[in-house]
Image (cartoon, rainbow, N blue to C red; front, side, top):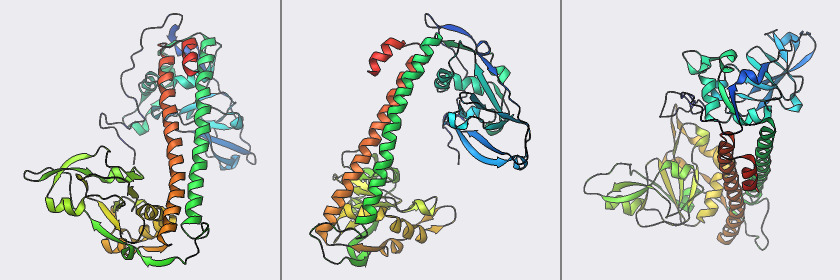
Length: 428
């Protein structure tokens, strides 16, 4: 389902506001894009047995990517145009969602239909800079207001109208410096993203070998025990809702999204305020070592997402749509990782009941099969996987910080609020 902003009737990928171009910075030029851009058509004479690469453009400036390879006879629309590396490609039906980008070298020679606009630039405009400019709100708004149609998913881009919009542009040399500077940030982000992929693989590999007993830690030889979750923990389903009622006690409520979005629950986190009876507080107050799972979901494969309670406080209570799994003979951190394992995920998906909304019964949770080593081995396994998880969190935080810094720098550069030399010193 497309995510729609509460502030408008359009998805978040759409910027529908009225374009307002700021003052032209000193040394920059102001004028319509028609002075700098032109459409270049390279018609393709289709050959039935020749194989062609067809591309598409991802929304939200996600880039130009290969869609499929087909023989000429398999392509229904015969009006196709050849692409060259470095072309700026706009999807006429998706540009309101930010579907534009530069054709990469590996897609040189690919083809597109007339549903796309293929653009080249005069010496006054660097297309890499234009690709950066596509991230600005003003650019996105001009694309929306150059498109016609009643429904946002059926709007058609009118290139001629868009080329009439004025833009503020720095000198071509500065454009190249700005795009290269932002590319340096992109390369840093790409490096961290690659490290994140490896960190995910490391954690998954540890879980696959350590949680199944395929790899034993040094000094441990005891046979693992097969049992149900109810043999090792108590399952407690909360009925505390988000309402505040007179006469009840104020509590901080740990909700579905707190568990779904976090591997660990900490007592000093920010939680919503609600009220509960003293009996509810006694029963559903979170304790260190508890494992919380989401017991409802829109899809079966996204149910029973676990989170470990690493610290708590007297006023922190478990909310509705969650189940507390309170360990008795199992380490909570180890159990949390065990519930993340694909075997556990498959079990809970198979036991989820529903049609449009799925849920787990207490019985289904209690009957979850476990294979447990002795407690000391659980602790050591949990600590090893936790170290991998911490590394993954560290890299993810680093990537988010880089993206925020790049976005802030880009907005300053594209509006002339920061000039190239000053921005270079900031980046250094």
